[in-house]
Length: 353
Image (cartoon, rainbow, N blue to C red; front, side, top):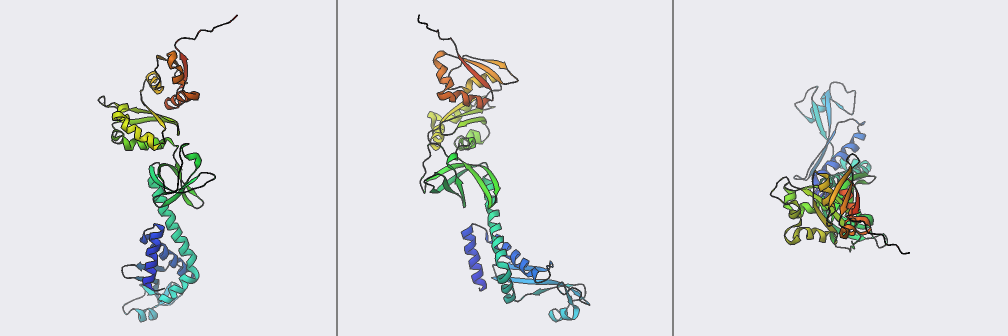
């Protein structure tokens, strides 16, 4: 292969793999050096210079000039060195350029698998860096393929392809090839085939990041998200707080006529969002967490065990508890308190004789 063909091939590979050309050149140079060293007693005397601007690839051996050679790999006699360089003396080093054909032979015979491995390592490192930059962040993903049996989706995030398991999708998600969706990268782990992103649409972090996008007051720190509890695809509760007395944190999140929160609901496939005020006062916090139900009172039963009893109007009991206990369950997760809900008045028991 001629040099210009070599550089064209590297350029094409860099584009295909999504790896900078410099990274590939470093990998190739490292592989060539490793191969050449094997022909020189594994001495650390081989060097490779790849210059894409000059379309040149040079490999040379650096030897020390001596009076009498004891190490044929790393040393060269003065009389032989003088044939290569006129002004040189004992103790100097001299770089002996290898014939291009010799380099090609070594690389072809011994270096192909090393070059392949180093390029693969470079690609994995690029993927690792890209994923770490997105770790615990929101990402836009393109649906490449959906398994018709498991409904797992193969998605593309930038130049990285990952799997979005059905268990990490919302119950309402129905993806088709070519669709775009928002996902949350909850973690990046090292797998047997390189770095792997844990991708989810059910993680509470997805709600947090969507709020940060839609609510500027959260992004600039005026409003803080203190806690999120979520049953993905059905309902989420978000506790928010602002140190600025002039700012209504709940109103900021909901937006005028609900425009902000509605955008998030739409992105979550209709999942309901309850945005409530956080308070350092546990009674106020628990009361707020049970929204949209009204609360008459909150009695702290055991502060150490975080248990309390909440009294609600009889008409609000089912709303406070929620469908299959969902509202109370989410409120407990949000606040970290065990919540016992009772009606204001016990319903009379009607007996028939």
